[in-house]
Length: 162
Image (cartoon, helix red, strand yellow):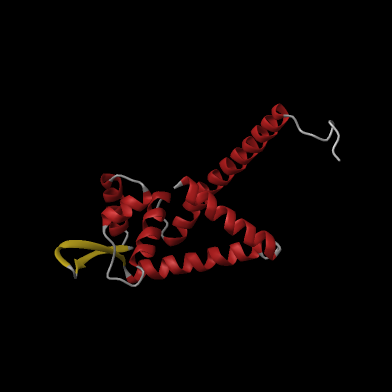
């Protein structure tokens, strides 16, 4: 049987909830800052002149291609939540660096698709392999239940944020 001292009052619950939300917001802010910094480092591994925005673009082009002939710039813009002019400037930079190319759309002769060049694919894959090795070194210290929880909860957060 619980005593009145064991029961949390609504004001205490609200305060505790606010503290938890504030702690989560602080940790997510730290993660986002680290992520921006990491994106620039990863971009530079692909090409010394590529910026963090280029990394997001090349990653999405690689993901979006997924064995197909290429991906439309408008689809990349949509997935990344960017306007077409921003994506267009980034695509031009990646083209000038020799990392992506525009190819004809086999389903629509008027349209152009984006795909990684051989050099772009090789450099991106080398960076991704190194990144996975680094993640593995960190996450190998975690127990499987925590890894499972992290994956599940990040998936839930991404779904709710989307």
